[in-house]
Amino acid sequence: MKNHDFNPESLMMTYGYKPELSEGAIKCPIFQTSTFVFKTAEEGKAFFELAYGLREKSPKEELGLIYSRINNPNLEILENRLCLWDKADDCAVFESGMSAISTVLLEFLKPGDLLVYSNPVYGGTDHFIHHFLDKIGVHTIGVMPDQHMDEVIQMIEDSGKADQLAMIYLETPANPTNDIVDIEKFSEIAARYSTEERKTLVAVDNTYMGPLWQHPLQCGADLVLYSATKYIGGHSDLIAGAVLGNAELMLRVKTLRTFLGNMVSPHTAWLLLRSLETLKIRMDQQTQNAQIVADFLMNHPKIKNVYYLGLLREGTEAYTIYKKQCSAPGAMVSFDIEGGEKEAFMFLNSLKLMKLAVSLGGTESLAEHPKTMTHAGVDPEQSKRMNITDQLIRLSIGVESAKDLVWDVEQALEKVEIKNELEVEKV
Ligand SMILES: *Cc1c(COP(=O)(O)O)cnc(C)c1O
Image 1 (cartoon, rainbow, N blue to C red):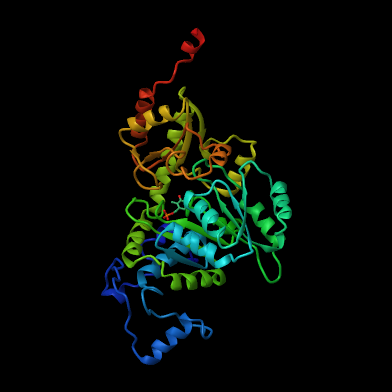
Image 2 (image 1 turned 90 degrees about the horizontal axis):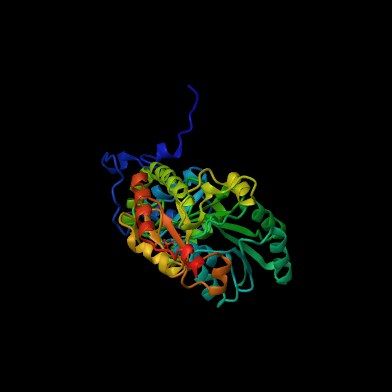
């Protein structure tokens, strides 16, 4: 028979792990150790030469285990498995999503550089851009969801810093509104401002869709970032992050990680290995459930708008980008309830199965109010422009029975009293 390429979901239980190195254990043990014993002093020297880039790797040589801030079997196996989903050369796992994001921004930006980023971005990323990058003299331009490519180019030109454009940072679909941007088009803009000496990089936060339903590296991005706390971890019991890209860029990311010391712990890496085994079935179930919940919300009289990729209408620009870039609509559903904060809170306080909490991507469904919770720190004018209003509610759909989820949403909506339009007419 001919060679066969296994799908990533088939490799998540075994790839990169050698039982014979661990007493034949079927599962990779937790390598709860800080340091590793060298066979000889010569071996220790050779490992350090590679770790510190003092010489080139010889063809068959691999970096040996040194110290758990630099490498550890749990981290390495996890990183190798994550590479399969995004078809990346290399991966670095971090102690949080923010740690992954801030390390990438610190490694590839320096004072005087220009960063273009899409709005809205995750609250923590927004804070890092406005309060930290600003402080060290990185210039930033935020692109709004309703702005077109020619406007983006105009803003870059008008900034007077076009020749310093070091990075385009995208979050698509965006949290919490599911706005999407065209990764390929932004990669074309990056190519336009790249020079011989300096390639303008495109980094994409793929937390909402990845690693299953969208592969930014295949759309022209240079780096893909995750909060692994979300779908990759998937059980709301850990905090972690990941970055993937080509070997050259990842060497830089991993080197900075070594010196910031913000790698994930062996125990958390082990939990993530366990999570990866069920990643595909969890995410498949979550997106199926989300479509059913979104369809229900769409036809409910107390709901004004539903923001879900599975409800985009053919012929719209968003639909075209969605079809090009994503293989499923995901499991994040946002909607505007009739009324305002009072009605939104009534809904949230009446849920019986879904929990009222921030975060997303876990096996349990969660509901929250972005304007007063996850996005409370965003400038009010900008929030309004991005559709983050009193009426907006965000749901992260889990693996429960879709019938139970619809029942829960329906009964919670029943409890919401909306000032009757008939009463208004009577006045
Ligand atoms: C949660 C989240 C982050 C931050 O990740 P942490 O693991 O909480 O540090 C970044 N981006 C997006 C889109 C997120 O949802």
